[in-house]
Length: 266
Image (cartoon, rainbow, N blue to C red; front, top):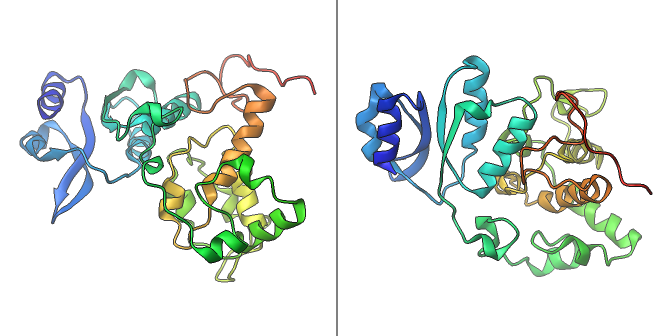
């Protein structure tokens, strides 16, 4: 991989390559260019997960014509598809080196967090939502029980915005999560329950690529993936659309030339 990246930089195939470099024993995101091409020898693949595609989006917003290369797992590739659809990245200017962290056969798509799921504690199993359960299993609870369990989870929120800030497909210039008309700003904790997370969940429909970074970033272990899987499941049922699987237009994207998807008859 190091030789390939060096070759891409020397040939001008990419202007910058986003990967990882060991810093004080920790793999951290690092940009490799012609100016620091000697550092390519320090490029590593890592089990650490950062949203390199989010970094690419920030760079491309400043320099639209820049050619960007990056390390990409399946989840990164799904995010790139979404970002291409929403005109945040130009697919012609993106090159990836796939470094999957687990075999795709484990699930429909590879995801390292499926390998060793954390086991919930006894209290969480009793009053909350198990992070790694299937949506269908959770929905076996009665509506009253399900509501009570979700309220328990969402009231833990400390409004750190970590889920939004780490998300590779959050790119709005003005975020409704900062709008006092929808979500109270300031230091009031917990935030209004459940409005804060329901507002975000609505925005995740047709966007969430189930990478799990939001849960990794959440300091109070809210099962956010479960919430977004449910929303995406509704999108799949209504529009027959699987988020991130391809760069086909999203049913919610009005920026393309033509809308091709229609809701299924109810």
